[in-house]
Image (cartoon, rainbow, N blue to C red; front, side, top):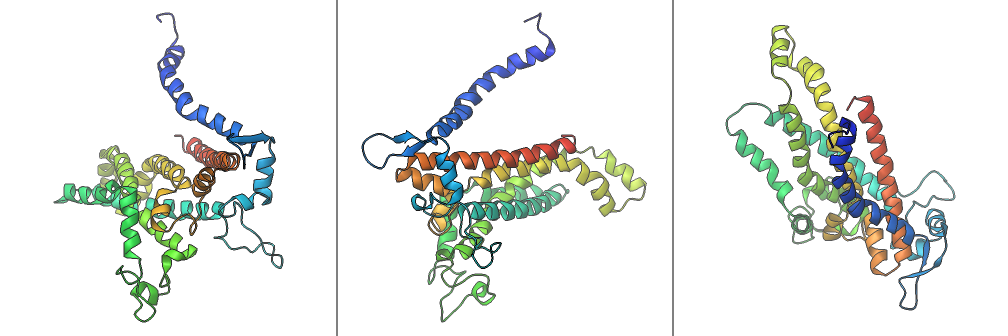
Length: 315
């Protein structure tokens, strides 16, 4: 080891982590892709049918595999208006909508919470604990809480036809929101934002606490306003941390399943993970593996976009 260069010694230290990553991540991914190259076995005791190559992927993207899925993978366009479609008609669109809006609002709310918690005020520790509590609630418990809150005649946030609640009067949801895809998706996004904004706040707050406080003292002496301090000091220095936090949340949001299943069910709000679990339990292993690998590929593309942004920001 004494003859190794610093780079070689660094790779030597990383070898156990790389081996562990290969065992728990790369091997299952390769195995999933291998399963996706075989047809579903509808009869018999074998798990998979004959080798079909990329036919499962072709059927998935052309809609020929829709018969085996609880909901469509891609949206179906109308014949009169080829570019108009029901955005809630496919698992891919539902997953993308959930990811975009949940990550956006979690980042904004988490950023605001971090700005508040970064200030010195009495009771700051208790406020931090209060913010962390929703994040500590298990997903199943969280889903049941919101499920009961929006049950007709039970939940206080949804009324009936004769006695509509405020959210019904505003037109935000119907009287049976958890049976409607659009209403359920809206409520699931709200539930996810309520829980995970604390995660974003803690990560962003950690980045804010690492900023050299003398920079703000110099800015105050120079006559910079609070907005100028935020624009020229806080935001540029915290941006890499925000991007990393958004990366973590985007990967997690693309795999959403638990909150959907406990609140509205996969039949009402289909997601990519819902397609994987449902087809696997059917069991249609070839189709399930195909959707799972495509989901992993989409996540990989999203991660690549973040990595490109990291490089441009010098992260």
